[in-house]
Image (cartoon, rainbow, N blue to C red; front, side, top):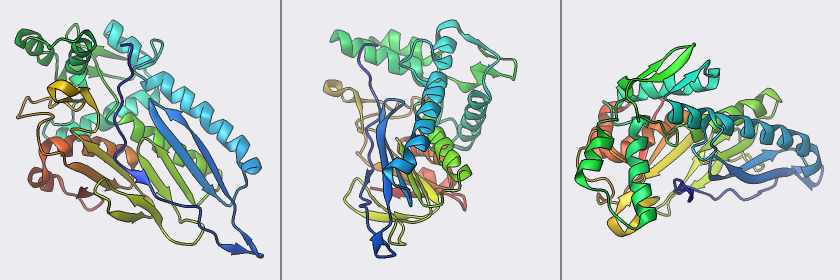
Length: 304
């Protein structure tokens, strides 16, 4: 696909570089910006100058490149692209196995609403949008016949699709997973006060002023993050076909409208960004009442 279509980030970081007096000077705040998995990325490190943080940011960039080589839909040489093209991936990486294991868990918890095998349906609509046409009912039915996570066989030796034409997208979970990986890397270096935004947001510690990291939601409200992550999804956040009202999040069960539902944003808070990412994708399809049945002590859903 020539045009990269990514999820619009519904959360905007409102954390300004507040200061904490240290020997009469403000605590340094190092900042990195770039792109990862098709999304804007930003990292803030409290207590390091730009020069001190430079080697660490270089390591992060290398790690981002390594993980993109696993999960990117837009790199023909990525492990995910090879799996989708060939229907089989030999000796999958530990990261690929971990993400698929989590996807299977969330798939079960959400009664099938989180399902990364919706990629054929996404690709069908994207192709038709690029051609200025709409898919026919038979094409949609054929794409839907390929959906179903039970059709993906996963083992340490290989990942295999049971049906030709199946494909996976990790766009509803990989950004959160990568966010967690970068946060873990920073923690391993002894950093305690960090904000990581790799499409989803993970906060460690506090801002330089000792307060939680401030995050603005899509409705203009604000909250503070402390030692947790937040991910957001909206049916209208990114449109595959704006004229037809087709959004980028497809219901794998074929239940109800996809993009013409109320434009609510599901903001899921969890200690892990990958979990928040996956649940927010399913939550926006389920709606507030159904999401309550998924409740757990570690997870909070805020609608905006």
